[in-house]
Length: 214
Image (cartoon, rainbow, N blue to C red; front, top):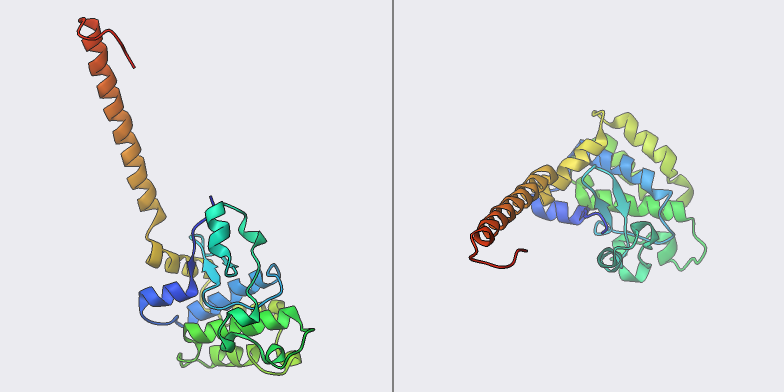
């Protein structure tokens, strides 16, 4: 079964507020690591999925179909421009260009996701400048994912951005370790109850009350 994750939009909905500066920079940095693996297409805050270890993946609209079928998420495609809000579609596509730079499109989409997550509201010059350069209309001005990742890393004040994103997962889904402990307790309880029942049946058979044993 595929691993469960939460989208950026779900995190914002649960928190009732956007990301802070370090969270936005972590989103850019970890997001850029994924962009090289993301197929051609556009994406929104609904498509960026964060997992329990703080990693993320860009998933398209058919995410739930693949999830329910247990298929590998790497096979999922991004969304078509017609399937998302216009704010997540870069100018070059809106103008009707059929040949576009996929990396530049992804950088633009990530910039719009950062805006959606609070990049327009935080009073921080570093985030403001990164968002502007990511969503600029002139394609050649947008940084490559590699350069953008380095720019975000240089501005981060924390050593482990994945841990920061992992905290957001816990906020929405809860602590996996606690869930595992709950399941483990139920398993032990079931096994103990089964042992007691079998022991009871054994003694009933031994004294002749029953003539069968499970």
